Image (cartoon, rainbow, N blue to C red; front, side, top):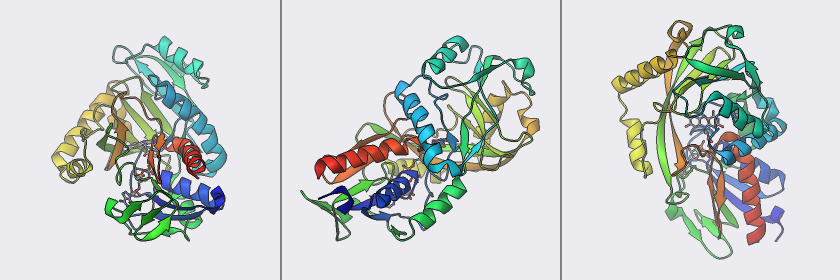
Length: 349
Ligand SMILES: Cc1cc2nc3c(=O)[nH]c(=O)nc-3n(C[C@H](O)[C@H](O)[C@H](O)COP(=O)(O)OP(=O)(O)OC[C@H]3O[C@@H](n4cnc5c(N)ncnc54)[C@H](O)[C@@H]3O)c2cc1C
């Protein structure tokens, strides 16, 4: 059977499920997308920092850096209408608190082929303290509302909303897989390990970050490398998120149930404490933070990560039968996922 004759079920309407569905429909395949909620992008895809990464975040993971660099240009090509420039986008390397010194950081980025400009602290136009150096980059922000609107229309004929798929709804055979009694050639799990666990080497990480109204337009500051903080604009250039490598994660859980419980039991007092700690953390480097950024609201979400190299955000795909599992990386790694899924489908006939 040719690829375009295949009948495929995709579970999960986030960036991965929607991109895969759109790509496969345009290849002529017969696709059904199951989403448990009444809209798409209700999971991490609608609740994250929306950076279109070039790799500056991942000085300590080569594979993630390369997937980011390549994913960046592919994202511009395919979904360029959903991105916005971030003209004031800085990466700063603190003195003492960074795991890499400024010279090493620059050498790693230059050797990865990603462009940046070194900026002197005197010409920045805002006060920065306790940092060894600053680079200005061309990373962008994803306009998530427009992307959601696009996929709602693009996929309207193939999405089944309010359809939570459980393992009991799925029967895998040699030549097909049934989902809720309907026959498909393949099933793709694009739930970020909410339906099937990708493998035993993953964990769930509930997260918190905070929205602020900023006096600076399109302003991003990321302190690297290690347990540091960052501010990044949203699709509204005057609203940004504040996040922190040590304070954003609300724990590590090897099962989804406990991770979800952590989010639902989260108290206002704890939220307030984390927010103040995060503000204090960034104020060490951006001393005017509390004056220039007005707190708006929290954002709670969930990541799924591979155990092992903490910095790894690469995308992986596997499937030796009729069920293909996607382990999402970042948003820009959707293209890696699509290629690998198609390879498996071609190989397994
Ligand atoms: C705090 C935070 C910040 C981040 N910042 C960035 C960033 O700046 N840049 C970047 O590139 N990436 C970032 N990420 C990562 C990014 O959010 C993910 O790469 C991406 O959203 C994963 O998309 P997904 O489609 O795999 O998962 P999701 O968006 O979680 O989608 C999964 C979908 O599956 C549905 N679902 C789950 N179970 C079932 C079921 N049983 N049946 C039917 N449907 C089901 C859910 O409702 C959901 O819609 C961040 C993530 C977090 C949490």
